[in-house]
Image 1 (spheres, helix red, strand yellow):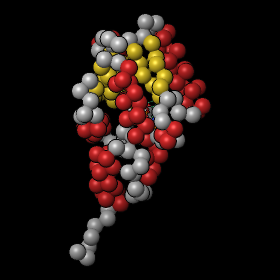
Image 2 (cartoon, rainbow, N blue to C red):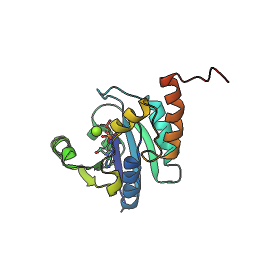
Image 3 (cartoon, rainbow, N blue to C red):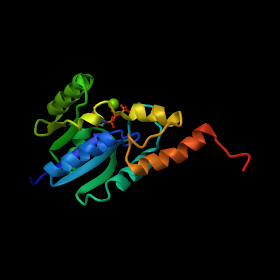
Image 4 (cartoon, helix red, strand yellow):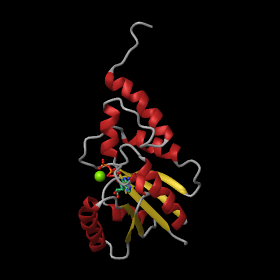
Length: 169
Ligand SMILES: Nc1ncnc2c1ncn2[C@@H]1O[C@H](COP(=O)(O)OP(=O)(O)OP(=O)(O)O)[C@@H](O)[C@H]1O
Ligand SMILES: [Mg+2]
C-alpha cells in the first residue's frame, strides 16, 4: 500500500499495546508516523521529549516508522504530513464510544481522511498507559507491560519518585 498513516496518542508512557499497533500499521502502510499529542489535558508522567525519545528507541528497527510530536487539530497535522489515514486502537468496548466520537468528528472536519481501527493481541487488551503509570509510581515491575527501553527508563525514574537512596552503602 502506497500511503502514510498517522498513529496519534499521548504515549505516556509507550506500552506493549502501542508497539503492537505500530507493528501492525507498519505491515499495512508504506510509512507510519507515530505522533505524540502535545496539547493534552491529562496530567503527565513523562515530558513530550521523553516520550518521543523512548518511542524512537522502541521503533529503531523499523525504518518506515517515524516519531514526531504535534499540536492542534489532528486532521490539520495529517494534511501537513500528506496522510489520509489515522490509526487508532480498540481494546475493550469502553474504548469504542470515545473512539467512535472522535473518528466521526474528524470525518466531519476532513471527509477524505479515514480512521482505521486495529485490535491488539489478546494479551494487551487490558493494557493502558494509565495502568503503567500507576505501577511505575508504586515502583512495581514493568517488564511485561512496556518495551525494554521504557522499563529501564521508568525503573530509573521510579527511584526518583520513591526517593530510594542506599544510605547504608
Ligand atoms: N493496549 C492497547 N491495545 C490497543 N490499542 C491501544 C492500547 N493502548 C493504547 N491503545 C490505543 O492507542 C491510541 C493512543 O492511546 P493513548 O496514548 O491515549 O494510550 P492509553 O493507554 O489510552 O493512555 P491513557 O491510559 O493515558 O489514557 C488509542 O487509540 C488507544 O486506544
Ligand atoms: Mg486512554
